[in-house]
Structures are given as structure tokens and as C-alpha cells.
Length: 271
Image: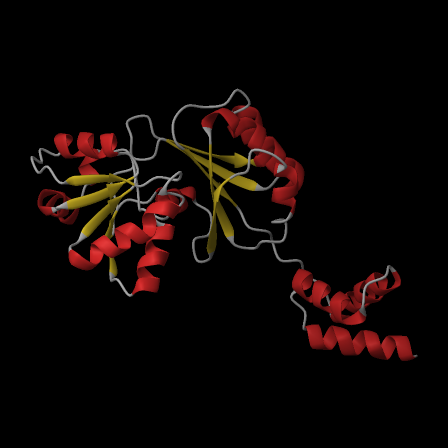
């Protein structure tokens, strides 16, 4: 069996009873950094000395099948340096390999930077997307592709690139888009900074220290009546779009019925 175990993201007191029990009894642990695992076990007062296997971004594709086969015979506890394995951390290829091989995968839930940042952000939590680490290059284009995303979005970012990333976010999504930067969650110097994209870009212009989560307000749905929507469809058609595609695009932007837009534009063209 593969056991994915969430580890503290900063505060050692967040180590669950189940995690401590699993570390105490584990015979084999596959971890992102074996040194971090040893440090964690020592800090928790665990004297167990399991077999340790390094499983990180540089070797997980090669190691996944091997560890999945090992888990047929005995349980393998899987750890990342912090939080839940496979969530922007090593683990996904292993889970995929185990699932394909019919090996049971379970989890010991626990701390999550994504959910913690979302919960404290003050932005809508009913629908959200986790976008992982921001790219180092072409961030304006990356954010522009998300301009119509209506769900709250959560990103990870390097503290050194934070100011530039927020500036690119403001350029693509607008200066007034609401943003929350969560820094050093659960740690002594935890900071939750709320503001507009431009305000936070200026505030963090020189970067920051620690682990960073960025939570971004989703786009506000555009509102339009049907006649206006039909005009938008016809305009897109005159610019070269196919009628069906234009109706779909306007429907997505306005929330109007794609069928009503299509039929209305078709009737308008026939007049």
C-alpha cells in the first residue's frame, strides 16, 4: 500500500496523531528530501529508523514503478517536505503508477498551504482553482489566459519573484483585482496581506521572505441583455469568427444562452 502523509507546513504542532503513528511504525519511507524526514522524526521524538528512499522531481518518473511494486509487499509511507505529497510536490507519478498497477493508495490528511491560504484570504471559497507555481517567464500571457476565470485562484510563488509576479498580474487582470498574499503560513512571522493587485505589487516590489501563496479574486461575470449579446455575436462574425463560435464566446462572457444567441444572430442576419 502507498500511504501519502501530509506533514506540517511550518508549525510542528500541526503533526497529526496519525502521522506520528505512521512515522513510528514505518518500515519504508519515500520522501522528497530524506534529510528533512530525519529532522522531522527527531523533532517529534521518533526513534524509528526506517529504510529511506529519495523521491524528488529529478527521479520520481524513474522511481515510481519500482516503489509501486515495492508497495505490493509492504506499506510505503510517502512524504514531501511540507504539506500533502503530489500537490505541487513529488508524488503524482507514483500515485499514477500505483493506480495503473492496482496497488492501493490511501492518505493521511493534514496541513495544506493551498487550503489554509484560501480559508484565511477572505475571498470566495465555494469555487476555486489551484494553479500551482507561477512560470518564471511569460507571466503576463499566463495571467491573460485566466482573465475570464470566475473561480478564486491560488498560486505558489518564489519570494524573490513576488513583486514582479504581482506587477504582471495587475497588467493582465487589472490594477483593481483583489489579491491576498499569504506569507509564512502557520509560522511565527505569518503575514496575510490583502489589497488590490497594484497595491500589493507596490508593497512587495522588493520581494519578500518565506513561503508564499497568492490568492486572487475570480473575474466578475459580465452581464448583458439578449439584444446586446446578439450585437456582440454579429460583431465577432464581421471580424471573421464563425457564428457558432461567436455565440459560444459571448455566452461564456455574459452568461446568456448560447442557443438563444445563435438563433437570435441567425434571425438578425436573415432580415
